[in-house]
View (spheres, rainbow, N blue to C red):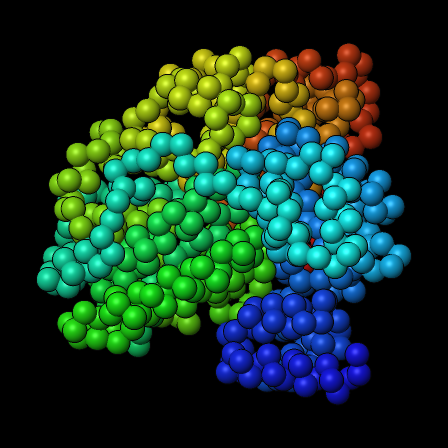
Length: 592
């Protein structure tokens, strides 16, 4: 493509987004869609069009997984290699793609027709193995499916007509709160009949706590945000469910987007916001058109926009699609991304309720939390608090996958035991439950009497079940590798610590580790947990630490019978201040 033609295309894309630096992700997505990749030349033109320094644009683009820097094929297959996908046969599917195309994963066919690449969890663990092909999800893949997919791509045809291009809802248990029937506008009408303070008081009566995993009281967050000083207030919905094994937001966005948007609008009224943002993970971009249609319908019905329901309240919502980065699930990293920057977490304090989007008071809430908020306004706080268990009120949507007969989404009341959950999904001969995803806990059978609640087992929603025939520590290695690759690279305890954790675990799995290595690994995990800047690093050691606690015999069985000077001295590396190399070369620019 001629230089001037490329410049004109980029200028047109930038114009679509008002040449705003805050819309850098949208401009990058638009340019990437038209040119197929973001070259150094195109980065310069984007910088010129948005009035930014070239280094700022390059720094941001290099951070996100789905922005290719080098030319790729006319079609790209992103095969998910998350743990559940590999449990269900993704490795065999990858081999089939390599055989059908004649190239390895990470390569492009000589005719530039097809590129093969791996990607992390894409929210389809309930119908694995899965892939994104030109942005279209393909599910329940088998090696036998691959030749037809490759032939379709070589012909330049749309894969959306293939039988594998079907995403099932897999909503296997509806509760009365998130997945109950709703009357669009009912919550808004009731909200506007209250003062913002009265509405927040109703949240307090309900005792709603954030569904993202941390469990912070929603009424307190909204109250802090409302009273914080600022030129504007904002509502942000976190729909970046990147925790491996999580897919309940995918189903909520598909099944009940009206309830979510109602919750965002109610939140806007409560905190005094006129603008809301839905941050949609890049892996869910295929949902964008339908979500925009729902927003347009709500505007036509007077439920969004100016003078909502004739009550003088203005509020509207914009959808921001991400670029592919697990760490953007952390609220301050999400805000940085929303502002058109790399998704590096901020130092806290100040917290987003004080200085969030554009340094203004911002309430960041989970998809499920906002759905619950809408239902509370509609039905009342007392109604909501009648569900649940002790201090954990309401219901929780769980994404359950792995070794069970009925993987899918289940809305259950807090207080359910793990054993009841296993019976519900048809899981037998269970070795372990990874509860809360890799950042949560790996629980042994003697803990299956524990309950789903904030005081015992809090979770964002991911539940992965491992049968007794699985090599559990190998999956913990894969989880640790995931954290190593997804670290934003800002702080050494996480950037270097995750690499050390991975190396130490691999040494043990190879059979060359000693008891001193186990002690050093435990010490390192505690250091990474205590010293990391954000939630990614603070939980990255959990796969190792929780299995060391709950499955000590698995580690002891892998230790070397001989005492010798190890090839990788974990304790020595720790003493020398974690001065270790060995990052993935593909991540060097991301970690720069």
